Amino acid sequence: MSGTVDCSHARLAIGGDPRNLSAEVEGHVSGCPACRKFRDEMLAMEGRLEAALQLPLHRFRDAKKSHAPRRYALAASLLIAVLLGGGAWLFQPRPALADQVMEHVRHEAGSWALQRRLAPDEIAAVLARAGVHFDSSMPVVYASPCPFRGHVAPHLVLQTAQGPVTVMLLSHEKIAARESFEEQGYQGVLLPAGEGSVALLTRGGGVPETTEAEILSAVRWQ
Amino acid sequence: MNPRPRGTTGGGPFARLLEGLRPDLVRFAFWLARDRAVAEDVVQETLIRAWKSRDELKDPAATRPWLLTIVRREHARLYERKRLPTVDVDDITVQGDPALASEGDIGLDDLRRAILKLPDEYREPLVMQVLGGLTTQEIGKELGLTQAAVLTRLFRARNKLREIYGLTPANDVEDAG
Image (cartoon, rainbow over all chains, first blue to last red; front, side, top):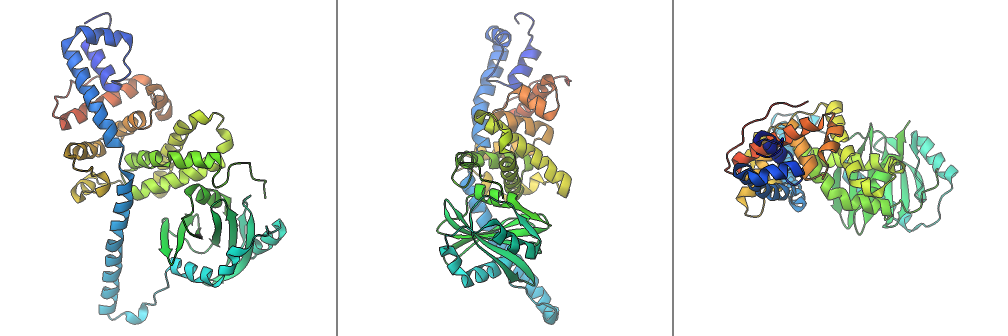
């Protein structure tokens, strides 16, 4: 022991923050073999603790991919169960949202070549058709009120630093979680946005998450 | 529409800063939520909130602790809002989540699982300190605890992990403030 610090205080300080000990605790540790051993053990563990917390994020992505077949397997087994149950006539599968976004954008592929920035009133007229606000400063070069799954969905093209990005504002398509997809050189993502969702589609590289965040923060359903 | 602040869209400095910090935010969110999908959702919400509130950040050097604070609050908000079921840690352990697996370092795998099994009240300050780089004072402010109480929680967290490490735990300490 030294000064006012006893072994109990020293252990508490070491366990609380082994790399930042006060001079008093250091003084105690230097004169107390048991606490010095405790400190050395904690410091050795600290390096391992840091390594443990640094999760390998590439394995996150791999793990996410490996979950996909299980989801499909579950979906397939549900389909079989419905068919075996004689309810095939009940089962009218709605095309997947991502597929329909892809299909829709393919039909308006020319929109990506546009460069003229639309005036705010041109964009506002389209948004008003769907009762949506999109308050972004990003340049909008295309805006169309498109029929989509029984509703009007504003279909926009933004020019970003990474190239054109198609944005579909789907006020009637609520989704539970972010879903990314890729097909024929297109990269897309469906993003939950309150009571609706937003579809983003680009080509030659996905949409950066910061751009996603900026776009999502600009959307407000009426 | 509002004029765009210079350098904040797409590849702007603030956006690049967020992108650079994103991996740490995902890790931090994962250790709080113990669920990859929830962690990704929390980080997405965090980026949106950070983007909206970017004018509040006066000191760029404080970006990291500021974002970690938002992650923590978004995580808490998500559970409040959606009443998500708590994660069964045994499920994670039994299934052998590949995201938790190190490359051949079994000791590290065991340590990760031990961290996941720590009660929230011990795991949260530990992750804030070791991964987030927050001081005990900052952790106390964020969690509404005295510095002594934070030290006690951190001590207990590490003391529990000592067993995984094959070390004898120290005697427990009295609860503080």
